[in-house]
Structures are given as structure tokens and as C-alpha cells.
Length: 554
Image (cartoon, rainbow, N blue to C red; front, side, top):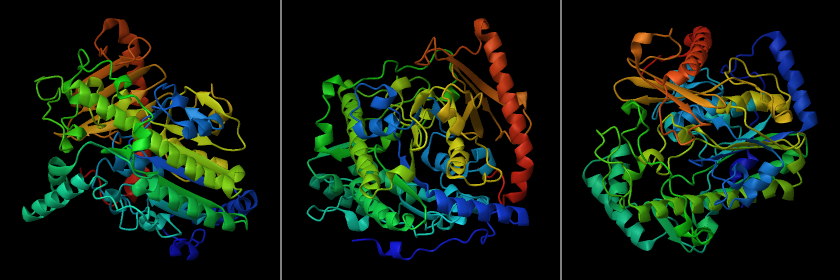
């Protein structure tokens, strides 16, 4: 059954919204011309976002992963092997990706933090495409719900945000809290009742339920669409069929599909667990604190602790009480579950991409596949994201444009580059005042350097923010106190920690080389890159400060 919302297409007339800053006669003429070209070229956009999926995939060289559909997409697209997120946590990295603005410019560093309450004039990628004549539709996890309104950012979608609720398997019971196990469902119901009786709400409520009745993994012998993501894939396929009718009549679309796995808990149908031998799961090679690393580099929050089958752990920030790691058999189970979820999501992505081909629109659809950030699977004793290390910030990104031949690049890129790249691919005017760069030339010439560094950041308690610059070889991270942001002039007195890692000599980040005299020149060069980045952000701040309603509230 086709969702009835799809029959109520609400086009967003070009320049009708006061949210889009293209009000001059010249800009209006430019937009009209762009809309005419869009109608002629009919290039659609399919954006697939995956929660917590790091690039542990065959196309990235992982020999353990069973990921045939993503690998097939990579074989006809561009694989960005050194792509980085802006913040290694869901909400802010998605806002940054979808607005093309760095977190210090959109001022979304965490959740909950509604982006339009802070920045009413902010322009999202689907909103911009909508303004230029695209039909825009979204489903699943696109924005984090804690950063947007009840319509998943209503201004972004010409079709009201879609729900997979009607697409679950009709022959199985619905999951409860994401689980299919009858025993877990009963424990979940009891835990929710207890949490309500205690008067808990929001995060404390969720944490209580998780601690009492939420195992970190589940292997259930159920069909794909017994779980939420399987239902979502069915909805996406039906939606593509509906949109295909419109696009063949000259109406292009921007469709965003957000899968939730492999986010914890690591839950997937049994057939995907069966693809792997648990005893062969690749345990982290280095599970200690890097030598000379400051404690501020480590999060005191291990996400895995939210689950009821995980024993108490310490982190390095807790005065080195232990390595923070889990017993070996449980590590193997968790990593097994993570890979099972990768393969499950891979199958669903294949289902969605096949819907393009089935409806004969694969040759005029650009596909972007991203994982919103990385994830620590025991390296450094960590089981979460929430850091500026490589395993948290390095992120999956594949872009396939049927007009551009396949390639692989090792030059650094960032999620903020997606917005300008899509504008270029679709033949649209470049969106105003965004931070990223157009990657189309890099896709055509993968050895071409388009930027000298990618910049990630993460905050800590006590008003500390760390900025991490990654070039093709090194990572340089500087931690600042007193709520410093790069929209302010650099202040050496606020520095509370530094890190420098050489990935050619030390890919596992075992030693912080920032005070090693042999790396003095590298440290100087990387610091100069940081200063240039801060200068660029200072120049942008004047514009964004006039647009934001709320400034620097943490």
C-alpha cells in the first residue's frame, strides 16, 4: 500500500520561503534557469544514511565484512577512503552534513539542541533542493529527532516525513524496544513500568530501561522486515516506485533514507549472524591508552554501559583504574553482532538501490551513501563514538553518479563537502554561505587535493572543546578550555592538551608525538593549518552571527 502522503505532493515554489536568502532579481533569474535545467536533466538524488556504520566493508579493504551490495555500489562510484565527520556523535554531525556548515557556525554541538531555534535562517540540503523544484522526501533517521521539530525539520520536505509503521512483516509480532525475543519484550515492559513509577523521563528513563532489560545483542530467526530497518527498506522501495512516475514526467526528487543499524543494540536476523564465525572476529589490536595522551582525549561515557548485559567498566579518564575493556568472549560477541548488522543493512541497501533499477531510473539518480561517524570496537578500550580519534571520526562515504566513472581516493574529505558537491552534480546554483568544497573534480581525478585538512571536534565536561585536524598522514588535536570556539581569535592561554599522531608510522595511535622533538616541524606545520582554519572561521563568523538567534549556549 502506498503511503497516502505521497499523493499529496506539495511543491515548494522557488524563493517562496523567507528562509532562503536568494531574494535579488539576479538570484531569482538564476534559480529559474537552474529549475529549468533540473527539469531537463532529471538527475534525482538518493541519500542513504546509516547510523554508526564505520567503513568496515569489503570495498574499504575489510576482508571480514560480507557487504556485496555496498561493494557493488562502490564499484561504480567514488570511494572516499579518508573521509571524516565533523562531530563523532549523531545529532550534530547530521546537522552539519545536511546544512553544509561546521558545528561552530550552526552551533549544534550536542543533543537536544534544536537547530532552527538557534539559527532560524539555516538552510538544509533537502530544503534547498525543494526550493529549486525538487520533490523531497525523508524516512528513518535523517536528522536526529532531538535537533529538529516534530516533522523531522518540516521545511525540508515537500512530502511530509514518512513512517515505516505500515510496512512491518504481517506474520510476526512487532518488536518491542527494537527486540524480537519474547523474554526481552517482557522484561522491557516491566522495566518501563518501573521507570514510570520512579517518575523518570527522557534520557534517565531510557537509561533505566536499558540497564534493566536491554541486552547489547540479539540473534533472532525472523525475516528482515520483522525489524524496523527491514520495514524501512520496503517503504523506501515503494516510495521510489511512486517518485519514479513523477520523475519520468520531468519532476526530479531528493529522497533521504536513514537506516538505524548497526547502532546499538547489535540486533539483526539470524541469517546475517550465520555469515560469520565468532571465533574469527577481529579483536582490537591496541586496547590501551596511547603513550603521552592527555586524559581529556577520552570520553568518560562508554555507550555500551547502557545495556543490561555489560559489567561495570572504567575508562582511562577514571584515573587508569583498568583498561576499560570487556572480557574476550563478550568482545567477540559484540563485534560479531556489529558485523551481522553491517550485512543486514547491506542487504537492505541493496533492496533500495535495486528499486531504482526496477523502476528504470538508476541511470539518472545520484546515490550518496554515508555512515554518520565511526565507532570504537574496543580500540583504546573504548566502546562508543564520542572522541576525536581515527576510529570515531573516519566515516563511510561513497558517491555514485552514473555520468562519472568509478574511482578511489585517499585525499581527505569531510561531510560538509556533500552539499556543494550535490549542487554541482545537479546543476544547481551553489548554496550560499556553506563551508564545504565541491568534490566533483576529485571524483574525476582522485589524486587531486581539494583541501589540506579535515576538521572534527568534540566537547568534554568543564567547558572543553577539542579540534582535530587530519591530513593524509597526521592528526593534530588541540583541546581548549572556557568554551573556546574557532569563531573567536586563537588564544594559547586556553590550551589544555595537544595530540599528534603519525598514521604511517603508528596507524593504531599508540604514541602521542606532540612533544617529540623529531616531530617538531610537523607539529609546527599542523599548528599553522589550525591557525589558518581559525582565521577562515573568524571571517565566516560575522555573517553567521547576524543570522543566529541564540549564540554560544552550551
